Image 1 (cartoon, each protein chain N blue to C red):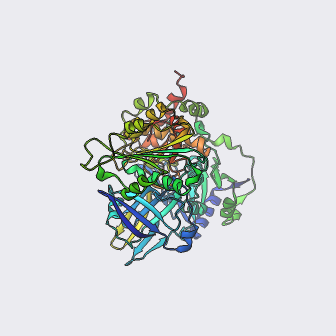
Image 2 (cartoon, helix red, strand yellow):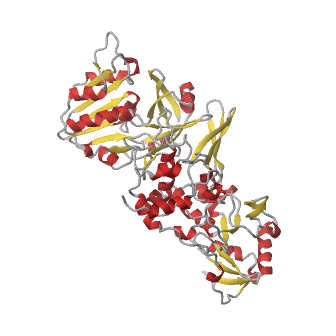
Image 3 (cartoon, rainbow over the protein chains, first blue to last red):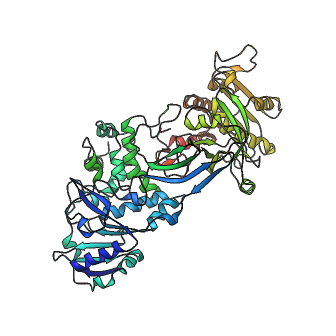
Length: 339
Length: 268
């Protein structure tokens, strides 16, 4: 890892060099009351004052809907056209949070723990992540409770920490990060004596995640699932804004003799998610589906792929229409004494 | 793959014999008893079924399905010569090698005979590897029994003890088999549990009442096998819907022993 100083002007210049290259750049953009990741063309478009985007940026590697293959039926023959990784554009994610970058780690785990998913991997390979450490947080943020933090560099290629003088500390973390620096190497000055910790948000640890995972191991029959999910509408908003939710559906989009097989986001919160054709449903109640959501992220994933399925970004709590707060629920489970 | 042959098994139930379009791919294709595949109808989508033919029969695979949803309706409309897609084989397998020298008892209900048919033919094609083979198979009615020709063939074999049954009311005037539900017929047949493995496959209600009968007959949980069928999309442990607790039916299953099932939450 290499540390450099970059001035306010340097940051702006480097950004413009990226924009002028053949790469697409996504950054947070203010749109009405919301901030969302959009493709941007100028430095001025980038939102400066915000806590969290409504949606995560996982879609660059795992799109909401993507064509797995397309096909054409002729009399007796059917020809398939496979996904071509060469069509994936080089992409830079600018000013994502450490929890956004960290979100790709469990996603990579899911898409590679056994079968290697070439679509996800091709998209991720062409994505460079420039995270900005967090200087602000709110009550929904809990990165420090799930092995992250406002200055966590896991998953990032470069991390920028803004300084009061308008300049920034740049931590160049990976070869992909180094390659991005070469677009404007003159902007990166020698390192100065900077204590990064002084410029980070204070995000208190709200629960002990090891304790939580331990409690979950024997929680399957606990009444807590029903209690916590009684107001859940099963709308799936939590899964759609989540940077690590990877459950998907496969759908057919056909017209006449041509068609496409499409992979699209799904949610374990939907009642039809596990419904059998026979009408039997292993997770018939919303409480069973809420339990699945929590156990998958905090028990099954740590055990199977050694990653938590949560980065503490707080999006699910902010998006929930009935104010189900994952942080409160996790804290309450972690603090529960064994009956 | 090409649909080489279609057999009507029972009302709404068909068996497809599928041949690889690419002969080399066909020759290289290997699978083991218990594994499943994802079958595609272009224009409709993809569905999960077991491979119902035995790995000892090379050059083709078979699947049996009941017309129920969009994909199986699309499959039902196909004619011989049509092209379908196939992904697989997926999942774990029945431990046929570990069963060498043992008696095998198959207990199946309704449309759950297909996953077992693969194992049955696998065992019959390697007949000398196993001792007694008993098959208890039941369906709602005589009409609903699948693989009728093969049932006749198994019944005629001296080295197979086949008992077929239909639910009360499902019999026809000339029905020669048993009348009664699978668990009670199994209790009547009372296969010896000594040096025997039981392979059970059927609707959840049948499995629920069959396990206690096997227990009564002296079968240990680790010698009782079943295969689970949760809804799945990807078949490779990613789409997130077939899990039972921390285990994926598509990766860790579909074959489980009763011992394994007892350590899992009832999410199937």
